[in-house]
Length: 75
Image 1 (tube, one colour):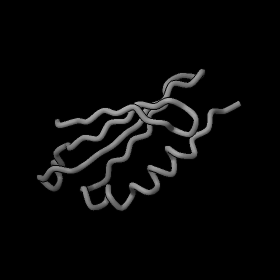
Image 2: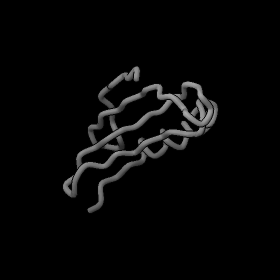
Image 3: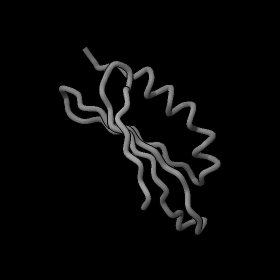
Image 4: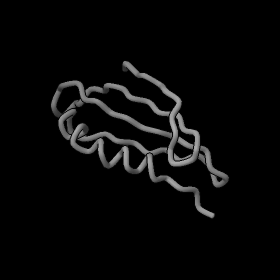
């Protein structure tokens, strides 16, 4: 569906982020989703935020942003 890609930071790591709208078959309505991805020595990591609907997605955004801000590679 409609997607917006941006370059971002996840902790100290370079990240790619996408925000998009998908269709909830359960509720038969559009809903927002978001994800970010980083490359690590052990392989790529993707963190996705969905939710039952856009309202739930919006309520969980602070946790998603905290995960992105505090991400640290394993040593």
